[in-house]
Amino acid sequence: MTAPSFRLDDRVALVTGAGSGIGRRLAIALAEMGADVACLDLPGADLDVAVEAIEKAGRRALAFHGDVTQATDLEEAVDLAERSLGPLRLAVNAAGIANAAPAEDMSLAQWQKVIDVNLTGVFLSCQAEGRAMLRNGGGSIVNIASMSGTIANRGLTQAHYNASKAAVMHLSKSLATEWADRGVRVNSISPGYTATPMNLRPEVADRVERFESETPMARMATVDEIAGPTVFLLSEAASFVTGMDLLVDGGFVAW
Image (cartoon, rainbow, N blue to C red; front, side, top):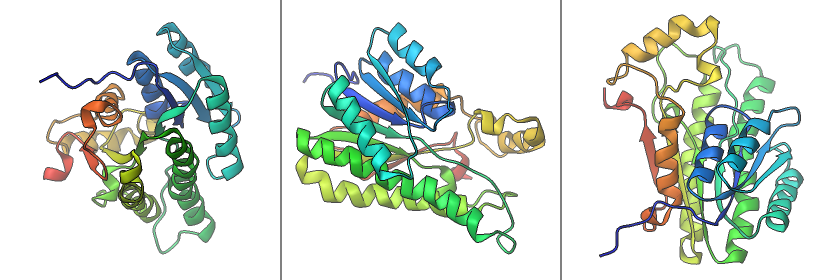
């Protein structure tokens, strides 16, 4: 038996939210495993770090500024990626936002913005990517959800965020079943508390101590620790894995 390969050599990938945090690290990780990577983030986002790191890894990179809530932006990003790099086979949808407010006080605008980006944005991303992969004969998509889609975080008033991430998990399962017999796999990853700029702000320092104390591994994840599970799900090593949500949470939901 030949050992399964975790390599992504010569495949073309699109990563949304590639300007910072988890999205940036995943874009670079895909290149380190052999993929050429198109990086997408909002206008004004710094994509240079990701692009430079991808090129340093010896792979081709493409930067595209667009909004995941706009279907035309995603269609243009996929089209440019395919014209510049080749047929799209891989995608990671990491674009997302978070904020908090008590449910009884939350404005409709605040609710809608989080749902628009975190859920509708993932759907539109998958739709544009899926169309290309179906046309190309197959591919693999990983959506970044959150353990907040499985549990309601203690002390955080974020019903909109939690609901959006739970929906991403089920959206991924739904797309997986629709596209399974045509060669497109769709999975999600649910990180626990992770050391990203969002969780390293001075104003949440007291919460970080609590996050870590409530995690069995007694720390937050590094962005590097989200890369391995993502590469696994994209690779041929996970060729029979679809419709799965993979918790990467240091054991948080086990307590």
